[in-house]
Length: 237
Image 1 (spheres, rainbow, N blue to C red):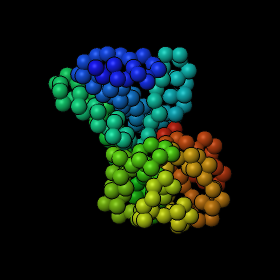
Image 2 (image 1 turned 90 degrees about the horizontal axis):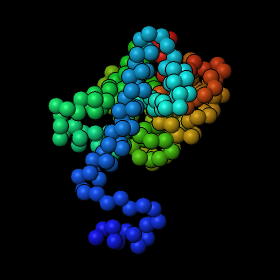
Image 3 (image 1 turned 180 degrees about the vertical axis):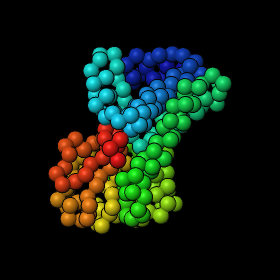
Image 4 (image 1 turned 180 degrees about the horizontal axis):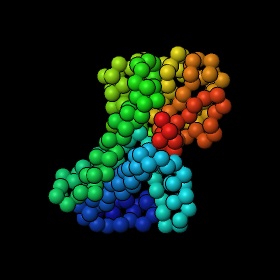
């Protein structure tokens, strides 16, 4: 009956199936992505220990026509990828071990980011400029965003936080200039287009020792006069 309704206006193919199959296929779409992001995030952790550029590894591995390692980041957010795998795990927890491990890996990334922030700042408390809290670039959607756990960890450990997100209207968030003023470190947590080419002259004017930690790996050219850390060189911290 549903197909009869949809075929009146749907141009593409209608695939008829039972509700359980349809629901599980939707959950598996998101679980596939979550598991593959976890693989990339785990690679970053491995490379940070053995002194290898994880971003170069991913780029080279993806030259293979059947390989597509996903992009690592500060964690996984949103109302789908961060939630749907648990629906599958809840139905078969003794079997869904890879799915659960992927969730645990992605959930561990905010703490991984925080630990590296502490290393960069030599555990000296100060102001941290957070760029982006949306879980997805160029949107104002912050549902389940890993940025919030990172911010909480920083606050709990005595850091002052200034948040800038041009896609979210929040009276507690500040403009870019205010956020970076006298900051010890800039941390990019969202891949908004606005953050791909920052005002580096303003950063150098506003920060005594300008450092950027780009957890989304969106700054492609190392800005002159600014120390840049990303998932390719965090082993140098």
